Image 1 (cartoon, rainbow, N blue to C red):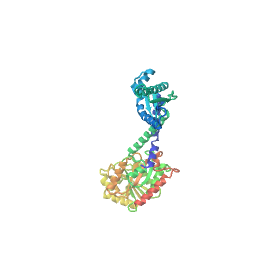
Image 2: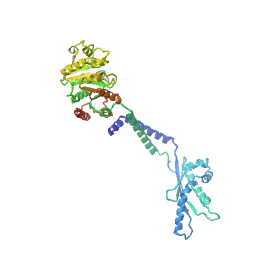
Image 3: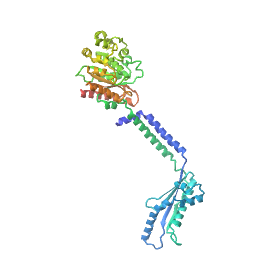
Image 4: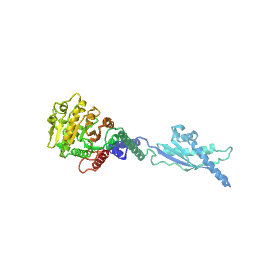
Length: 472
């Protein structure tokens, strides 16, 4: 994935990320409120070895070395019962030495003769009392019991308190700012992780990068999403100034750059599955092409579920099937539409053998006749993954154009449609993306189809034209 893809993911899932961030902060704040505060009190001890008067320098050094080595062992003595039992008895604590030991931590800075004894308690005053008591009894145990020589001689080890424990003014835990910062960090990481995982598991077509992973054919155009598309499918005719109508004019411009000099200017327009907008795309593209003065023939090649006649508002009882079986002549069923040079050939009656009719010699002759008389011939064909009709008729034309719906068509479905065309040697000219959101990160990948927006569309159009020239 590229940096642009991660930016799109963050833009698309910013609400999810924000919710996770707030949940992390809320959980950290709740934890800080619920957890009882802990107070730490520390006393510091100094360990030394007595030296007699007139001791040589070497003896002093040996005494210091011994003290440093002894400190590492003394640290383990602090939590022992021999030290803690007298502390419990002195302070009247209702606990055993084993229960008190986890509250007492002893440590020694590296290469020093210092011992730090830290006590953690819920009561700050009790923490200071226990720390000082532990320090005093520890020194007594070491000096008078562990390191006392035989006889009446004084111990050579001396332990002094150089910093007594004081009552802490504020709790050591919970650290509210730190907890909230950690909660926010964990929530942010969790939100980003979920967003990236959801994007990785999402196999639907969203961006130009998604299409590039499936095929190297150019993106011919993008059609903006229109919630009212079912009520007004012919947007180019119904509302010429609508941004969606401009999408079809942009598609018309890009289609003119597709190099079809080696074949007829006839195109089969299909999709991987149903409901991706292929029929409305074909009809609007035909209208936009006729607006330039070109002579266009629109054929409803979906002999299973024809829609063109309904969209165009014409009689569809007699049409393509009647011509193919010889029951009617093309001039009798071809219907002129609008003020331009657009002619529509409806599907006619639904036959029992659509694939055979579309791949017949009669269909080849019909397309040859129409291609000779019209500048463009557009054929609306059934979805490729459901039936073979589109693949069969594409062999008789200049190439196929696939329609993919943003946020609906899956990558594997588009890849399957591409393979269906390649398997029979048909020429895929490009891809049209429909149902593009007008707002949000996914709309940026194809540019904005309204006046005064960014230049993304111009860049994509130019890239599409260059790819079309190189593929020629």
